Length: 269
Image 1 (spheres, helix red, strand yellow):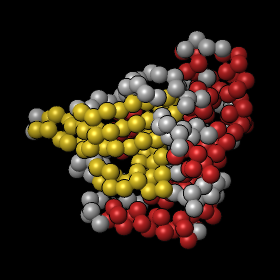
Image 2: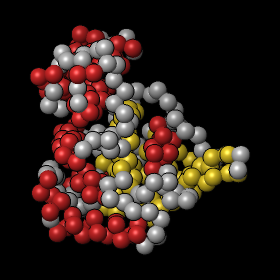
Image 3: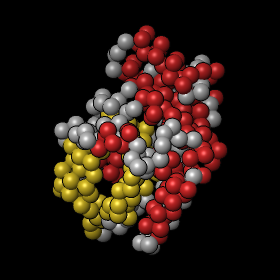
């Protein structure tokens, strides 16, 4: 049975639409085909993950949506327009938190507003609320260099939430963390998505992580990157650590893993 959320998004016009997308890199040794005939539509409020082994083009696809990579053919639209960098309705969070070590947690979170010359006083008030939401209220005045890796990623997530983009793009944001902190932040992200209902596009190698977070999982194979299947994740929200212990979640993880292993192109965790 589909959740109410997935039923609502399935009838809305897509905020991201990709059709017949092809992407190659040109090298001295010849062309390298990165993506082939990609077809994806992402609807308002959906959480969609791209999962697959290294070399399947997950991050490239995310960067194309962000307007940070070009492509050779096909059509990509974000809110009906070609993707372009720097737009305020699309925000991106990378593997590295990209904090300024000499600035405090609060001043790192509000930095984009400062750069855009927005209302800094209002931004700081809102930032304090979001810093509390991501569990860093006791560290508001700590400097970037004083924080652990997990804390730094929380600051990066808070900064993205403060900008409040309609689409959040997340490129393996927790991949460098230990298993404990990764699971904790993944659950926190799931909770925040339920609360804010923003469209999210998430890149990960972890099948279990994708299942826990997503409404749909786009399964990609490498060399070149192609869509094997788009799997609906019809698990009830809110989701917790116990969600992955359910028979339904276990079967979804098993199905996606078997799909990837059957192509013998690499191993996803």
